[in-house]
Image 1 (tube, rainbow, N blue to C red):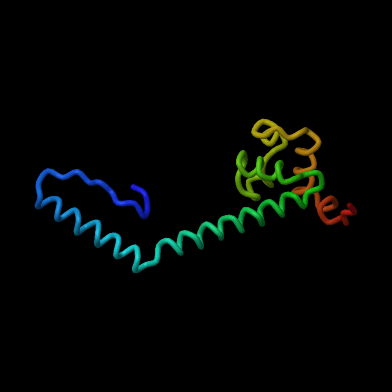
Image 2: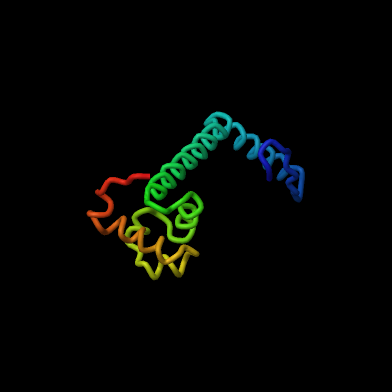
Length: 120
């Protein structure tokens, strides 16, 4: 069933059909009352903003670009999971080079590395 399109609901008898019509009308009214569509739109915007922040954090690692950040998100998941991942698990689950995997590991585990100034 698509939003905004009328649905065809098969029923066995007219009384059951009337009951289904009432249930559908009630559900539609409740959705309108709660303004579900704007809530869904807001949630979608928040998800996009969270992903943007995620990509910004990972691309702050030297040598990691947007493509690498998205690949890490899909393969490993959260930033915490990436920080805890071993070099071998990063290499197995992504197509990153060994140098990039080493850089990621150093970034999350070596304070000398992540606290030093980066000059681009």
